[in-house]
Image 1 (tube, rainbow, N blue to C red):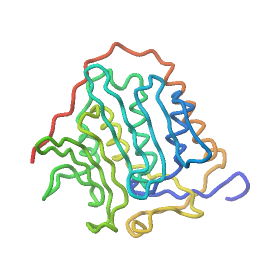
Image 2 (image 1 turned 90 degrees about the vertical axis):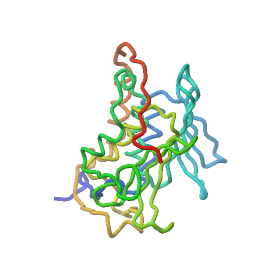
Image 3 (image 1 turned 90 degrees about the horizontal axis):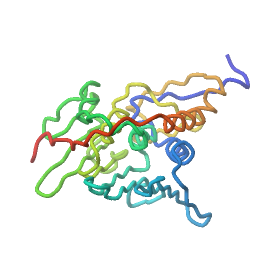
Image 4 (image 1 turned 60 degrees about the horizontal axis):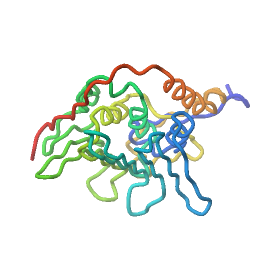
Length: 257
C-alpha cells in the first residue's frame, strides 16, 4: 500500500544504535509541554532552555570536543547541585526518559527504584572485568562509578574499545536524583525499536552492521503528529494534582572500586 497518506519509516533496534533523532522530541517537549522558557539567537547555533522554577538549564549546541546536551540543576534545599550530559548521537528518546522524569510532578513522590533494575529486567548482565551492567549484545554499558571522592554514573554505547568505536556516552553526577537516573535506564532498556527517517537513514556508520533496520509504512498523520501528541500529553500531565512529597533517597552504590 502506498500513496500520499502513507510514508516509509525505518525502525531501528536496539534503540541505543538509532542515532540522535529529532532534537525537538526533547526541546519542544520541554518548551511547549512543560513551560520551559527558551532563549535563542540567530547568530549562535544553540538552544538554551530554563525550567519554570529557574533551577534547571538545558543547553544544546554543536561541540566537536564535548557533549552536545548539558543539563545543570542548582542546589535546592537538601538536594545538592547536579549535572548530566549526553553526546550528539545519543537517541533523543533516551534523553527524553531523563527529562520526562525531571518534569513529572509526581515522579519524586514515591521511593525511587534501583536504577539498575530496568536493565536487569531487560536481560542486561554484570560485567566480567568491570562494575555496572552490559546489554545482551555487549554494545551498551551503564555503571555507577565510585572511587575515592569520585561519584558518578555513566552510560555508553560502542561497537569496539577503540576511540573510533564509540557511538555516544552520557555522564550523570553522583548527586543526580535516583528517580531521574531510573528514567534514563528505563528508556535505555526499552525493547521497542525507534522510528527514524529512512531517506537518508542516519544510523551512525560504525553501527550499521550491528543495528537491525526494518522499513515499514505508516499513515503520514501518525508520523507527522507524533511530536504534537507528545507535547499535548506532557502539558496535560502537568495539570494533574500532585500528591504529598516523600523524602528523596539517594541510590546506593553497588560496589566501590
